[in-house]
Image (cartoon, rainbow, N blue to C red; front, side):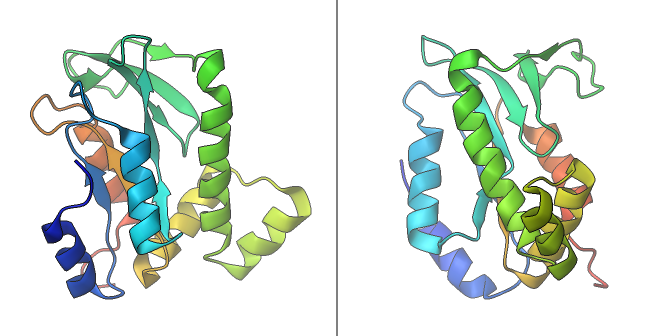
Length: 179
């Protein structure tokens, strides 16, 4: 439904503190992840960077999740991302050809955000125009810590879709309280 007043207020109160955004209810019929992402970028700027994207079939149903950091797609089974070492974990999927351009565009944004967080990564990025998943994770972690990067994930709190990926991302990118 777009940005809520609570979202805008929370953003303002956080200042430059580390933050992440979880776009909930991605699996509902009227959801539009891309429109929500565009609204977030329009309101909060280019620090907002997607870490995942939903795989949507022709019937506008979410059938999977693309992990943009590791360039991997997971099929959704029983509300959980298959392949995440869970009870329902069974299958990695390939990204459909019609979604490949969108995924590459989002990965490019992710690489740029990661490179912008560290001088060494910036030089490496400009030399090769590529960064490994480890380099991107390091850059994103630095960016989250200093408030220059705000990762965006999606899923559904009710069905559990994307929640495991959210938890893993928190462990991987969000600084501990002592930092």
